[in-house]
Figure 1 (spheres, helix red, strand yellow):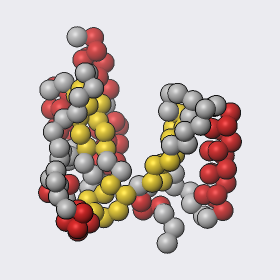
Figure 2 (cartoon, helix red, strand yellow):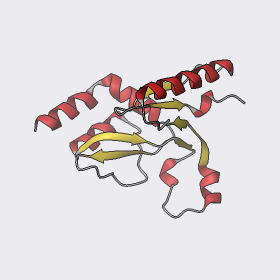
Figure 3 (spheres, one colour):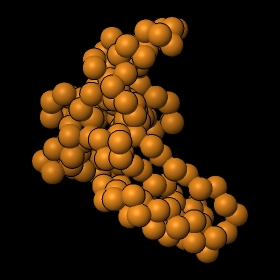
Length: 145
């Protein structure tokens, strides 16, 4: 019960809901459950109530696709590449330097950030992965021509 309350309190925060809705625009956003299982696909979050309903049904986290779609609810397992390409608007770039040492990982990330700056890129994020590395994300809209 304490876990549910903690998750509910987190996703009840208006700032968290706004952020999830903003990031989730034109993306699949699927539920992750306590046992590691994922919710049905395709799925989206369009409204704050969608988030709270998912949590009430056992969602503990949300995973958003790196792909952006014209209408993610039109996706279907087994679609042809051509049909997927017609729906796809673009995708974010996610870089996960998988190196054996945190110090090497820091060097790799610093070099990538230098390269981003050299190309005028300012919109990217870096997140510690919790292991010995980092995840670097570059939004599709931030990619240079």
